[in-house]
Length: 129
Image 1 (cartoon, helix red, strand yellow):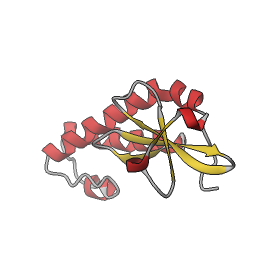
Image 2 (tube, helix red, strand yellow; image 1 turned 120 degrees about the vertical axis):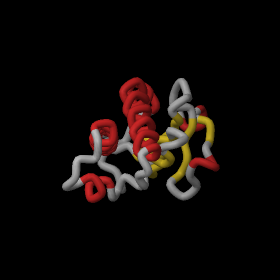
Image 3 (tube, rainbow, N blue to C red; image 1 turned 30 degrees about the vertical axis):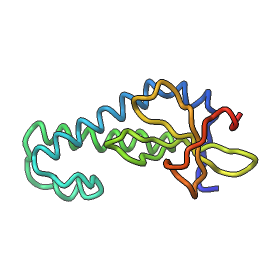
Image 4 (cartoon, one colour; image 1 turned 45 degrees about the horizontal axis):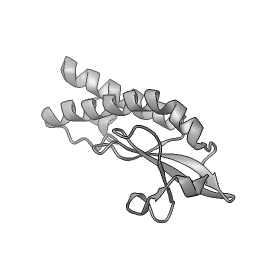
C-alpha cells in the first residue's frame, strides 16, 4: 500500500472544513507569489526565499504555502491540482487502494477514482459504499 492512512467517505467529509480552509490559504499564497513574479512550483520555494528578505506579503505567502502543504501531508492527502482545489483522500475498495476525489467548491466528497484513472474518470460515490 502506498498510503499509511485510508479514509471512509464519512471521515473525509468530517475533515472538509479544515481541508477547505487549508486549500483556500494555499490558493491565496499561490496568487500572492505569482503576483510577485515567483515561479509557484513550490518545491523550490525554500531555495528562492532563503537568505534574502523577500518582503512581508511574499514572506507570509511562502510560510502559508509551506505550512499548508505540510498540514495536508500530515493528513496523507494529495493535492492533485491546487488551482482547481482538487484533493484526493486515500481509501480502500475491495482491498485495493483508491482515492476519494474532492474539489474545494464541492459540498462533500461524492466521487472516487482508481490510482490508474485519476480525476477524468471519477465515479459517483454511491457504488463505492
